[in-house]
Length: 139
Image (cartoon, rainbow, N blue to C red; front, side):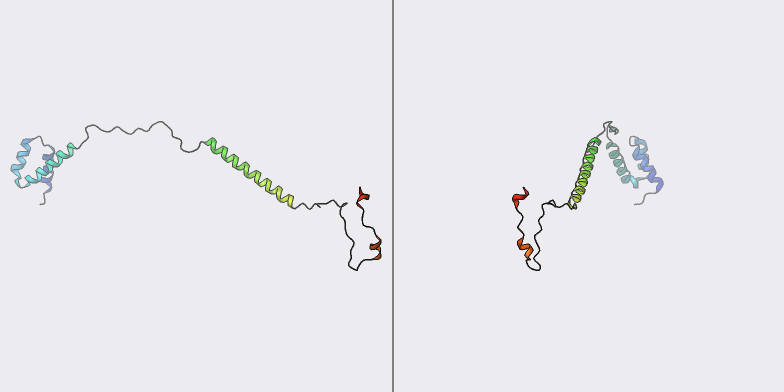
């Protein structure tokens, strides 16, 4: 059933002021067809007022304590320095290794190198007469 706007507002006022019996009896005698609706609204207001907390919860207050999560700045700086030094040393060692591979120094000094006679055209009389180098003479 549709309740007119003026009666609806009056019904909420009567339901809100539940302690006033005179106002309640006047409304029931004037609008008997809305008595059931008035009882529902009175019960709703009583339930809503009864559901209020007896004490208001405390207001949130953030603590002054500062929480540090993760490593400290000093540890981060130390680890970063160690990593950079390691990378620098690795780069230096790599360059030195590459340079050492490209040095073309003979393994045996030139005075010790022995070149055998060439036999392309066959042995010559000169090569046959030559004595092989003697190890005792060099010492």
